[in-house]
Length: 157
Figure 1 (cartoon, rainbow, N blue to C red):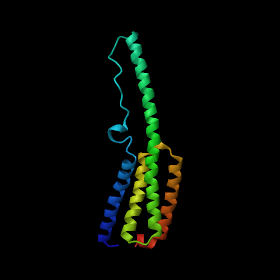
Figure 2: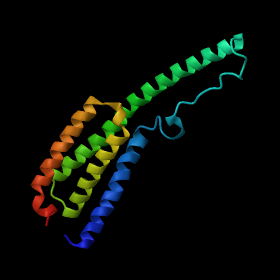
Figure 3: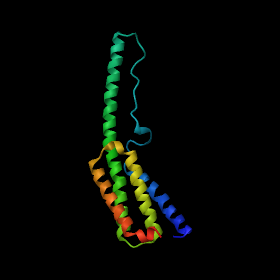
Figure 4: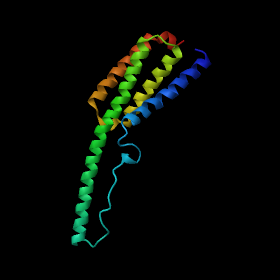
C-alpha cells in the first residue's frame, strides 16, 4: 500500500473513533459532563462531638453515602448501555466491512477504528462487568481474527 493510502486510512480511522464515542454520548447523555459525579449536599457546620447537632450531622453523612452508592449503581447500569452501544456499533462495522466490497483503505480505516474503539470502550467501561458486553467482545474478537485471515494478502503487502 502506498503512503497516500495510509493517509486516507488514518482519515477514516480518525473520524470513526469520535463518531462512535460522540454517538454514545448523544444517545446516552445521562451521567456525562458535570452530571457524571454525585453532587454532595452540605450536611452541617462543625459542632462539638457528642452534641445533638453532631449526631444529626453524622446521620446526614450516612444518608449522603447511601445516596452516593445508589447513584453509582444507577450510573454503572447506565454505562452498560453505553458500552453495549459502542461494541455493537463496532461489531456491525466489522461485519459490514467483512462482507461488502469496498476500497482497501476504507476497510482498513473502519477495521482499525472499530478495533481501537472496542479496546478503549472496554477500558472506560471495564467496571460495568457486562455479561452481554463480554459476549459481544468475544464475537468482535472472532470477527477480527476472521477479517485479518480473510484479508491477509491486502493487509500485509
